[in-house]
Image (cartoon, rainbow, N blue to C red):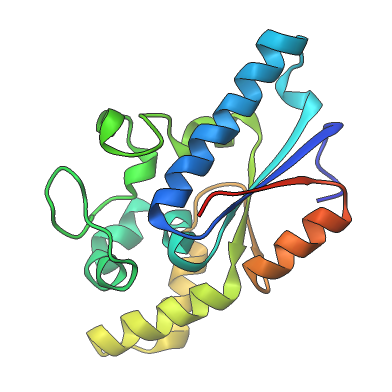
Length: 179
């Protein structure tokens, strides 16, 4: 957190599938409004988006959603708005959902390109590994290793998302809870 460039620090705390999409939108707004209102560039901002609790799976690649989408979908009570079925891709990395999702077509990759970092809840990742392993008769440790090695860029696993919320505040980040 301390190493990120940028005087203006913001930490978006998402805890649900919808909250992850809202966090993408608000983080994008933060960049756009700082540019248009204050002529600040991306390097002037330090932005962290926390993916914890029910939003944790959005830190994982399409390959993980294709493989484990059904148990993830069941756990977080989220379906692909196009198919009304468990997602087989990380929907927040796809542009073509537009207004069907709260991120309004802005993707995680747009934020990655701007320099946003992601605090990913390791505690939740371990819990999802256990759920997936139980549903599919796999070994939780192997699923856990696979999920972590198939994460979106700029991810940093933290012991628990709530701990990252606390540490961000201690380091001067403004906080917005996205639900």
